[in-house]
Length: 84
Image 1 (spheres, helix red, strand yellow):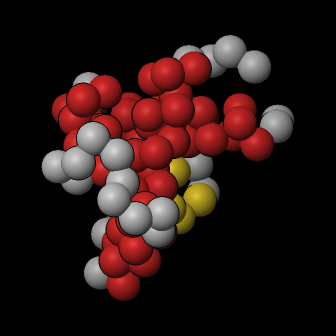
Image 2 (image 1 turned 180 degrees about the vertical axis):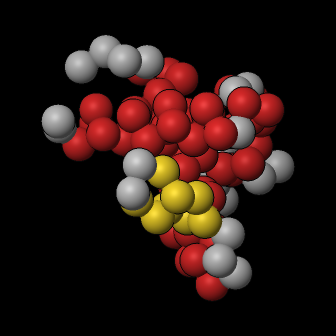
């Protein structure tokens, strides 16, 4: 399974456990905050670091992901679906 397919599968798994987050605008707000796009290039990296530091993680198919990473996978799944 290629990297993109794995990320989409993890996103699908995340949404199966958190169906209330199956909303693209919500995921975008969760990932980007109140801004339409990140104000700094490392905003997502900072969010991932904060998630890991506070143990805000998701266990998906044997992988431990920061919640921000899991949400990014969910967004990818919603955008690209199961297409290869």
